[in-house]
Image 1 (cartoon, rainbow, N blue to C red):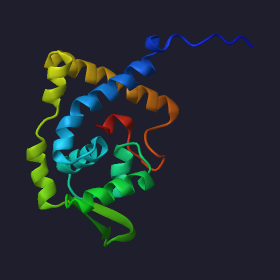
Image 2 (image 1 turned 30 degrees about the vertical axis):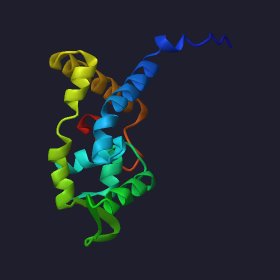
Image 3 (image 1 turned 120 degrees about the vertical axis):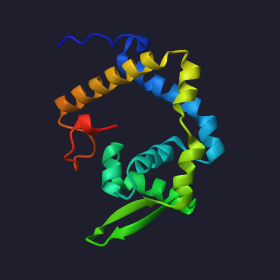
Length: 162
């Protein structure tokens, strides 16, 4: 079997996407630090701002995380007074996560982090929207080829993801 060496790291798409994600998170970090949030916490809040009162499993699926990975993050958000976790009355094995008044107010404080990305990137809004569309399409194609998104518990399709 002939194994060729991998291309240089800078020539690999996976590294470009990975390192761009880190650069974006570093751009957001000072803004999130001022709010007392981590980037994953911001993502959870963002999902709840779009649709409050979601099951932990659904949040985990939307973020492609295991529920057990998400639980400590939700505990910290609850300790900060931004969310409440309650057992689903219809199924006590499931937990519903809902925003508190402080969590809803955080949406206004957080504003749109995209403005920081726009400024840092030097790109136009249209260029960033086009790039986002292409990266989402790539992600969806890959998840379609490997059998789906998430932890294996979701029945949602990749194109329904954020």
